[in-house]
Length: 340
Image (cartoon, rainbow, N blue to C red; front, side, top):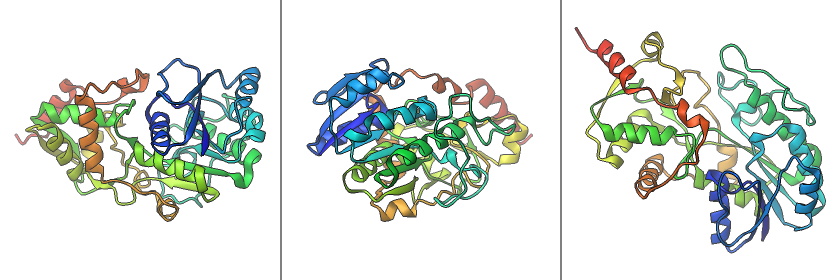
């Protein structure tokens, strides 16, 4: 099996490359060489996917059985279309990593693959779309929907489109799980979003990578939501963080109305916390039937901490600074929650 990975130097792309090499596949990676280094054992082609000349040069390294695109989130639909057209004659199958943000109802409504999508042309530039006043829909979602349209236009039934929600695990760059782990290690009273029994559905990066590779080899055409089918409760998630880090902390639960009144920002200050009804109601049953297998979330938690302790280094990314409530703000909120 010979594959091309667009991206491939960090997090999901790197996990895909590592898994492909373990399978004995031949791997070509195409990237700009700016945000990471390629794993040993692959053919690396440096270039810019916005450049017609660079794409033509890349095509000369083909053919491939499949391409897996992990880097489209940085580019407009027009650029995704450019790459698809340039590589069509050299690639039998395209596996496209998209997002649940393409759904018009995200994050307000439970989602399946039949849910309505945001509308964006396949040739749209980076200016298309908007972010709503309440944070949904997002311009990012419009752009990713247009990227899907571009791939479908060029590859049709030879495309698989994966729509993950939140991806966690070793190598994470956004900093959601690393923040919770370092907070658990610090111990003490930990501000926790109630209800404690609410389920969240983060999926391990290695499980997404394995599913993407399976789709590249002998996948079923179509689209798949990629989320943890069982998920984990907030109580179990925080218990796993405390156990992994050896922290002596104790969650202090606060309901959504109280957290909102106290000025806690959803999704960022308490990573993974969001009140919208659909955010953790993503139906992944179609992907499970197609072969998605997800390890328990507490295993992801433990192995991410092990990676960090083994000098795991997150790629420097501006989104990491957005995540986590400051110790000072948390202390004030905890004080406000304490009985007089």
